[in-house]
Amino acid sequence: MNNVFNLKRFGRLFKKQFSEHYKTYLMALSVLLGVMLVGGSFLVYLIGEPIDLSMQVVLFVVIFYLAGTIFTSSIFADTGNHTKAIAYFTLPASHFEKFLVGWLFSYVIFTLVYTGSFYLVLLFLLNIKHWPNQHITVLNIFSGETQILFIAFSLLHSISIWGAVFFKRLHFIQTAFCFFISVVMLTLVNTSFIESMVGRQVRPATPFSNIMFYENNRNIAVAVSRHDDTLIFWILVSVTVIFWIAAYYRLKERQV
Amino acid sequence: MIEIKGLCFGYRRKPLLFKDLDLNLSEGHIYGLLGKNGAGKSTLLKNMIGLAYPEKGKVLFNGSNVAGRPVSVLEDVYFLAEELFVPSLTPGQFVTNTGVFYPKFSIADFYQYLKVLDIDPDSVMDKQSFGQQKKTMIAFGLATNTSLLIMDEPTNGLDIPSKVQFRKLIASVLTEDRCIVISTHQVRDLDSLIDTLLILHDREIVVNSTVEEITERITFGVFDNTKNLDVLYEEDGMRGKNAIIKNTNGKFSKIDLELFFNAVTQGNNSLIKILNAAEYE
Image (tube, rainbow over all chains, first blue to last red; front, side):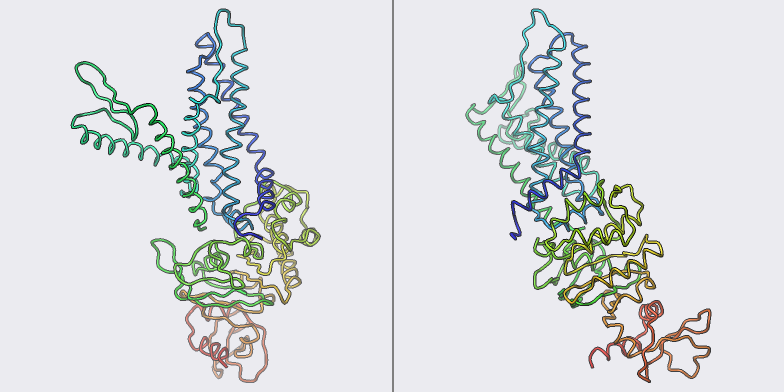
């Protein structure tokens, strides 16, 4: 049998993962629905009007990123637990198959289940009562503008997988800590670089963001032309893929 | 079957546990791996199945390097760890999901072993006691019918009747194509089971001899007085002096593993010299 990928063996691994964890997944889904429902109801009660589009985007993104990264960390957490790691690594399936099963559950299946749950709760909250003279808009995640939200999630997902495989314990916390420290460091370095380039003080800027400064009592932003968003898109995609590949190789090299 | 060549291994920021270690294990044997706490028994086993990667040297299983954990190796090796993880499934459900990964797995054997070890096949594994979990996983490991079966402290947590059943089962599953390695510090649990003794001490395998070779060279006995004997090692016991003496009359005695282990790990060079001489002859 192939040492890298075999469809039959992959199917068995997928089934094993589901049958051994489906109770945990169902519990996690219940918690997710509960948080959305209770939080959303409270929000509707507070604002007294239907949730507008920008708030829908914020809710979708915040819960998506937070739940997604926690779930991803938990899927690969077995590799950091001594007894579970032995069972995991000695199971006769390739590292690629093991990685792919975790990737499918934490990325593809999670995204589908999360999106379905979000719309279910959102539609319930929007129709919970009659809103006279109010225009109700529903977020369309298939529009081109929301594409970047999924790309950003992909990046966070890849970092979460890498952290879950790299760290031996407290995977989520350690990964989040490293992520935020890295963002701060990158921002400092990038800001210094921009300042040396333009020869003036600018506001802290993350890599590939706009240059912003204050001049003559006005905030001025210098942005690249619109078509250059493609560059940022491909950079994010590339970094995502690099982290996925790094996580896979880290899994292969992982010792117990 | 297992060929260890020039193995060097140490954990990060710690001294090497093994340095240029060589070892060959063949099918048709039950090896008992003994060593003091911290000698590196579990680490050596982990190197044998690719859970730990050597710094230098390599471990080959039937010619394949185990580092990298290739599926072809994992399918023919089963490792029973000292501490176990069991899912929230019944043994029957567990076997349905996991047995399929082992090409030679026998469901009939599994249920037979469960019966012998007195395990209810419908009990949920993570609700079982530690001893029951261990017995379930022993049954699973035996039913995989892998060529290499490695067990780390398998008798820990087993009650006395279960230890007896365990010994019987292990003896019954040994075939000419199978190699079983059992690591333990409870030597008395296995003294009638193992046929080859490996003692790991001071970063190397100081003894790698069959029980027959050992008892051919040395004699174990309890003596009132050892003054006129060529004693290699002795300890005071309840019934006199437990001693190891050179076997000069060619008669075989029953090996006292505990006594032998103590003699070897206390650096008894004359004893080791006699055993090594036996190996080279």
